[in-house]
Length: 469
Ligand code: AMP
Ligand code: ZN
Image (cartoon, rainbow, N blue to C red):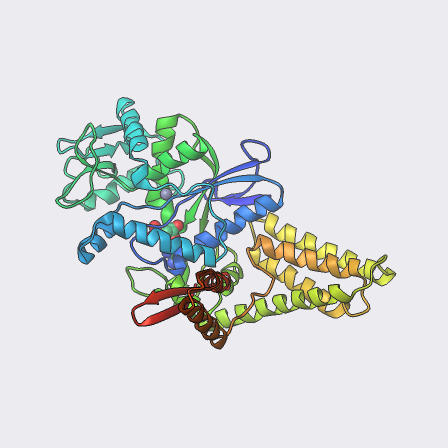
């Protein structure tokens, strides 16, 4: 398998640190609002990377954090008149719902910055002891970039250039810096902000330190893959490398993977530009599988422009696959047992070649676009060769192949059972009747049945309200 490595700027052969195992760390979102579909791109892409490793037989330890202390969270909390914790907890829950909708596998661990402060204090102390960091008079702790000779190796920036660039920009409150390119590890609290005790001042961590600490704690000093969106290359990942390698004395991550942006009108989709759609909004118009399929229709290192037309095209493509699996399922019930015919054996070879084509595309730096076209060819083969006369062996071979290759892409091929609004209303009426008759067991059973179909009931003063999950 070949992976494009931002560090080496070429496709490198994947060799795991430990045979059969992959240790992967993916930088997660800052939780101050609903996630937008730009944030969803790395989630979908790296979940697919994980699934492909698992398909190949690797055991994957997948860690992805939630940044739950940050200026934006504090700002939102002040605006709403609640504490920062209320904001971050709320949006972690909402983010997890969106991830489930997009069929993202739960991570092995989702550490929270606020629960890892001790580890951060330890790493900062180690860095100070070895001269890689220093505390200024106001208690701010900075990383001394000049002390780390490899600074700039990921973003391929030269420290001298960086320093002259930084010299132009003077940040208020950071007057205690020895050098303009030094970055914050720990900063003093401001009025009304969450803070923790530390040897330097009451305060909170800088952003970069959390990922170095969490990766070390949950995966070890060295990991196979570190990933995130390309805006994280500098300064976030560059600073993570400096912190981790200076503290641990070992190469931090072997492969650095970065997805390109999801754009809208060829501009990066972002909260600050206001040109975004949340996953929640898209979920009201489409099954989130369509969003997932759309994201994977391009290679992860190519910019992808979001448009209604492309979403419609993805929806149609997805329906073609689901219909084909549906047809194969129907044929399976009728198909005769017994050996495959000679013609079927020939077709089986074609199917196997398409599976190889799919794997070759994925082995080549996770080229999901080409992998999807191999799936479409397989669907075409199934639609043109499987019929009422096909043997069970042949039909099930095609079906299993399509299902397993779609599963790697995180696409669920079984059609979801639809439930109409009128059926929901009828079931709610039956539940109300059961409650009137004090038959609470039946009422609960009906609520459970609705929940299984993704319908959530809420008993309010104005009566029962329902929504689709
Ligand atoms: P943030 O919450 O801004 O730290 O972002 C969380 C993740 O989403 C990071 O890996 C970002 O690089 C990624 N990200 C944010 N916006 C986009 C976008 N428009 N396209 C692709 N990735 C993005
Ligand atoms: Zn990170």
